[in-house]
Every structure is written in structure tokens, then in C-alpha cells.
Length: 276
Ligand SMILES: [Fe+2]
Ligand SMILES: [Fe+2]
Image (cartoon, rainbow, N blue to C red; front, side, top):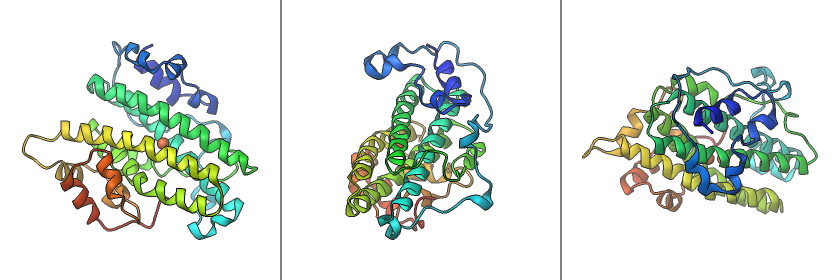
């Protein structure tokens, strides 16, 4: 299968099944076959556009959207369902953006494109698992209003470097803080299913951030600071505070392969109020 076909099937699918059915399904059970994905016809670069969505997963008007519930309120099952629902939408938005990145950067190195394919498989799994948790709380995916926070940044992403700075080193890096935080919160309310999911997501996110760090170094000229390159290539609306949570997980960043200067400079960035 061509990578372009893989990406188009996800990005243009107008059903949830289409977004989550891996067109390269056989590869899931045999990841060693992944290198057999071909990339001979990556096609022309595709500008950002809103991906297709089924009617029940359309983005809600701003008036109808609600903020993610506060951590203190998560003893309430409905608040937990709303939180898990919002996180599931984050996963879905991320994987749609990743499919677009494959369409937008046809000339990126093969390692970059293959790495993105692997990450999309993880994000599809994360979306599925969040939906299962939402259903375990008696709700359905699509029951609560959905936002488009990640998509708003997409038109500002013009090349693979700004892509890794925004997606992998901002949105995903922040999850190295958010995921352990929510694992602890869910566990404190005896929701071990949700807590275990946050733990799995943290583990997978280490690899996704590692991918971002690798390509940031690749695109940083010799002798220059990857952190400086990161800061100067953040696209509009992807401010540095989006790359961290309230509790800074230094060790997680080290495990994700970020260098000591990068970690120290990140720790100095003022915090954001939390995931949105
Ligand atoms: Fe994810
Ligand atoms: Fe991720």
C-alpha cells in the first residue's frame, strides 16, 4: 500500500470506522511488515482543509462548547465521561492532522513519513480506548460538544520542522505532564480503567516525543541549539506554554530523549492552566 493512500483514507473518511480502521490493518499484527509500505507516489502537497467527519462528530459552535472539567470534580462520573470524551477528541484531531501531514509533506524523508505512520497507528488505538472508557461511563462518543483546538493551528504549519515543533514537541510533549497527572487523579477516584489508559498513553507518548526530538535535531544546523530552533519555529497559536503542564515531568522528558538544555529551558516556561 502507498503511504498516500493510507493517509487519504483516514483524512477523507466520513465515518468513525473509516478513521479508525487501519487501511494497513495487517500491519498492526505484524509491525515488522511496516517497511513494506511503499512511498513511490507521495503526490502533490495538500493544503490544510477541515477533515471529513460524520455528522455526530462535527465540531460544535463556540457557544455550545464546554471547558474540560476541573480535576477536583472528577469524582462525578459525568465529569469523568466529559473529560475522557474531550481527550478522545484530542486523539482523533491529532491523528487526522498526522494523516494530513503525510499529504502536506510528500517530500519529507522516508524515516519521517514511516515514523508518522507508526504514530498514527498508536493514535487510532488511543482513540478507540477512550471511546471504550466513555462507553463504560454510559455515554457515547459524540454525546458532548467537540472543539477544534488543534485544527486551528494546522493552517500555520508550513513544513516538517514547524510540524514537529507543534505536534510532537508541543501538544505531545505536554502529555508527558498531563497523562501522569490524570492517571493519579483517576486512580484517586478508583477509576482504574481510565488511570491505566493514561499510563499506556504516557508510555506511547514517550516514543512520539522522541520522534519529535530526533527530527528537531535533524533540522537544527550543527552547533546550534535545538531548543532555540524549537522556539523560533513554533507556528502561530502554538505558544511555548502548550508544551508543558502544571507539573513538569523532567524525568519523562529525559526518557523521551530530549537534551538537558532543552529540558532546563522548558522548565523555565510559564505554565498553562491545563489541557483544553
Ligand atoms: Fe495519543
Ligand atoms: Fe501521541
